[in-house]
Amino acid sequence: MTRKDNRMTVKEMIDELSTDDLYKLQFDLKSGGRHLKHLVDERIKAIESRPRKICATCGTPLSDDESIYTLTFGPPDFRKQANFCGQDCLEYFLERMKPLKTVQREESGINPAPKPQHHPVRRRKQNPSLFKKLFRWSGK
Image 1 (cartoon, rainbow, N blue to C red):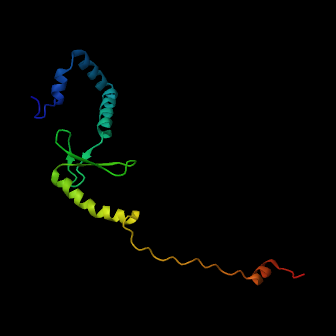
Image 2: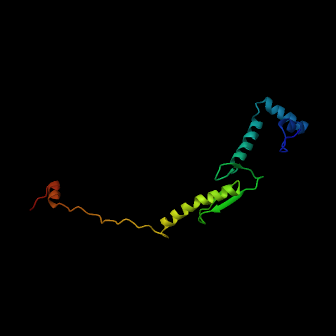
Image 3: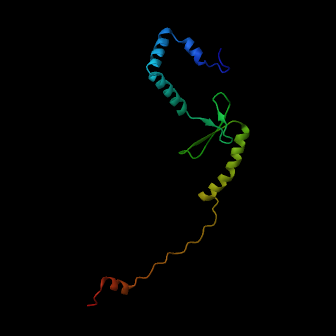
């Protein structure tokens, strides 16, 4: 009997193996199961290396089966992508981005805030007598 999501159980998978494959699996398990362990490790690495889609607002894991909303934003050379589980999360994200955009405009000079006045740097006057004392200047 298969699961609801049409995936096979381990027992069903073993039942589907050919006799030769079953003997190979048995031999591998008796000798420590290195080959089987390697196959399982590689499959897990492949699964973990896939990018996971998570809703940028609520943090809900998203699967490829669901209809998801994707927003691509940012400058052309540094694009970002955000995924959302529903329209409400997308709208909430956009509402939160509006204040950030006004701050960025102010920083970029589109709507500049008054800049503080800079004072010129004061340099210390050189004391020629100190120079003479340090190097034992002879006035000859």
